[in-house]
Image (cartoon, rainbow, N blue to C red; front, side, top):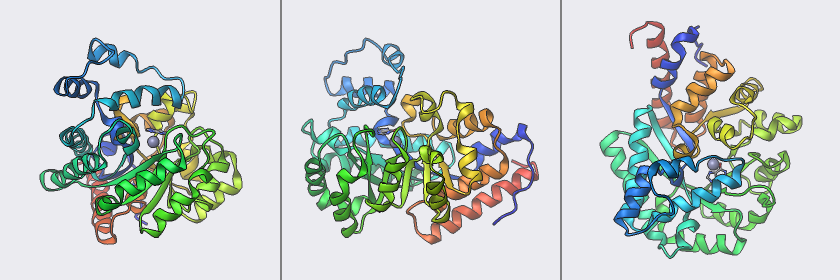
Length: 350
Ligand code: HPA
Ligand code: ZN
């Protein structure tokens, strides 16, 4: 492992912004900014229950996960046509590239759209075309992860998988999101087993609001390769050991955790504790349009609030590449660029 040189605290924010990174936990519907929600509503002839962008933004005052999900699903209802999905994903990828994201693995919630009568191919083709164009126009690599909504039934998840089957070459894997408590991973054991047979990569949200037991079953029943959030793992020493030993990545989202009150304050966030226990944590934005910041805002704000160091910064960016579903050749190139950024920072010439 590269020996990270000492870098003073005042130079850390610039380094955090400049360092190359991968984003592994971003819900594309959560990147829909109020301005784009209004523009798409107008384009599609829809009337929103809010008079202005400002009024919509002022409704973003959340008390827990469910209070956010209610407004997040309402915002996504303006997405009807392939071009709408394209515009949303293209806007996110442009923003991510400015934060020096080299690779993004993007979640999408097809059931939110198919339940409103939008075809699966409309969703996937729009998102996939945006990923393809972003590669040539921005040099950013991007892939898609289909998430099943855990508040819906196993039957609905199987139906969703069937609808996606002709388009599986356009997605890299599947995940599990939405209301966690009361919807344990076991509910989707058979769907995930089928996805595994189909050669899809597997991830799941677990231990955001839910207990460590949900993280154990995501690993042992669903057989996922990464845990989304996972911050509740600190309450179970045996689980911490398992996650560290197997280098299971956690895709942590500090501003989301702050806004949904998973921690009383950003200063109370346990990111440093997870890293110091040897877990492969990463930093991500979750739903940046709703939680007040994109990936670099997550990095700079959690570092400022919890006094993390340059060594933690390097580890987080390295983990993000290592935990991605990209090939080894890409990972080595990105990790080399990361090392170069740190070396340039020491020489004061960026
Ligand atoms: N948790 C669960 N479901 C979600 C989230 C989240 O943070 N964001 C979008 N869907
Ligand atoms: Zn999430």
